[in-house]
Image (tube, rainbow, N blue to C red; front, side):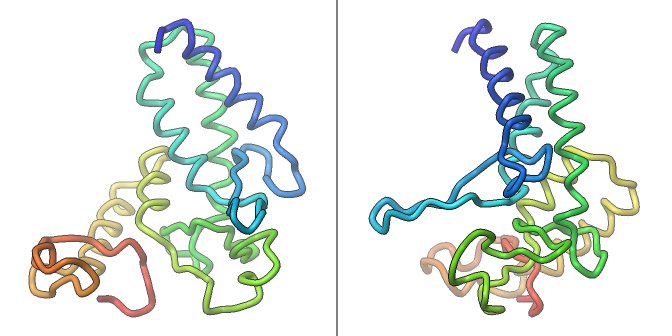
Amino acid sequence: MSKIEIPLIIDKIAKLQHTADRRYFPEGVLPSYRENAFLFYRRPDTNIFFTAITVFTLNQIKQYLPEKSQKQIGEISEKAIRNYPLFQNKDGLKTYNFFRTKPSRHFPNGYLFKHFEHFRIPDDIDDTAFIYLTSAHSKEDAEWLQQKLILHSNNYRRTINNTFPHYKSLKAYSTWFGKHVH
């Protein structure tokens, strides 16, 4: 990819962020979709993950780009970060969910899963990590998250149960901040 193409991609991201359908995507959240071609299923998927990883990636290359692109990345980031509180833990903890929590909207725009508590996913490490990496958090918040991650790891004494035998003893974190620490 040439340096000339990158500003065009950033323009497209900014435009997507600006023109996203507000019925499904709050201003600043990049549009994404759940789909299954076999079932002819395609729905808007209001989540923060793709927005946060895009903001992270853009900020990693920002310093190498022309001033106009740097300014656009700053604007994209600002608009995205304003939405992070909508995905923060429902009880006020400094963890984040893939789906909106304020108000709760798991499997938004779907017909079935959104009606069942069973499908409400807990906050997760991926969203939380990218939100921490793209927004300001205090040293105390970072230390709190570090301790929370340890609680949700196999903590060097448990094994991973749902993997191949040669991976069971690896040191790893759970993806989810679930109710039951494993």
